[in-house]
Image 1 (cartoon, helix red, strand yellow):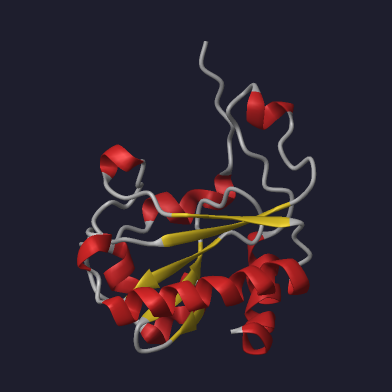
Image 2 (cartoon, helix red, strand yellow):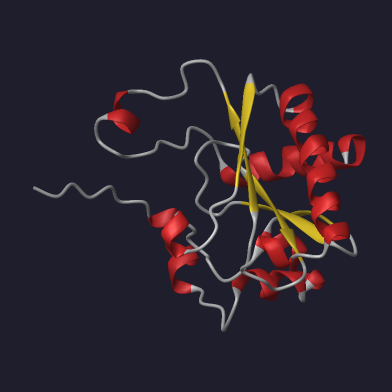
Length: 162
């Protein structure tokens, strides 16, 4: 038996298609930052809310350089991504109230990457007991708050922490 959870508010995520790499599209369309939920950008990277978040506040740090190989990423960009990750953790803990943070990269399709052609680092805020039976048993996530509200809240925090 297959259970279906209906979420019509996510229609735009599956109907609005981007030609080519979605991360390169975000990287090259600064004028659409608000619509694409970009939190921050500089010459090396940008930070964007995850459209399919594990928990509220889940965002990614993504290099502008299109590569699927971390081992070939410019060292300066990698160090910059790492520095942004430190600041992002502080933002999520101090500014957003997370009890902890998961940081991760899924490299390659076999490594679990949903968008394997362009590396990206996830920062996932966590709270005590934020995994419940529906996540553990039904393999379904419940997003407990409004995505737009969370984006605006974190966006306001960025200048203080990043």
